[in-house]
Amino acid sequence: MTLEEKAIELLLRSPRLEAGTILDLLDVGDREFREMARRNRTIAKLLEARRAGQLKPPKSEPIQCPVCSEWFVPYGSSRFCSDTCRTAGRIREVGRGRHRRRPCGDGEVAESGHAKGEDIRAAARQKE
Image (cartoon, rainbow, N blue to C red; front, side):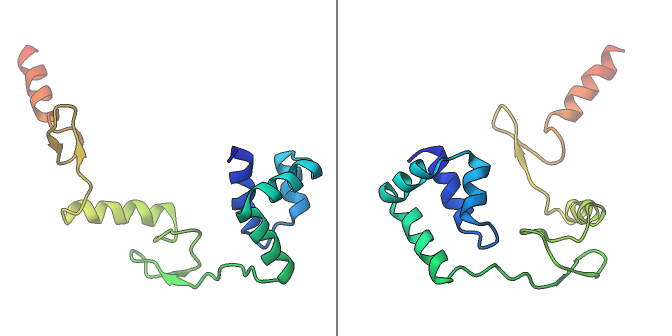
């Protein structure tokens, strides 16, 4: 399966895009597209579902922002209504100890920032 076929599969899942628009976006000719539909069963099934009108757009339900309690319609899987609330939410998680721990190069786990950050800063202070 080529990259174009994967892209066409993904774009055909959206009922908002017409097949002609998808072909124009990816610069794929009609003949190439027909060959892809013959080779790739997923593309053929998506085309049949489009013809039958079985593709439904996903519904977005309003959710409440956990930071400011405002209601909003999320884009994708966003949990927060704005970048400001996202930043505030991350700060709250760090304060509660629920922040991500990142591995360091030598296998240690960083609490916040770099695990050896304090050691490096202390050594730099001693050299001054």
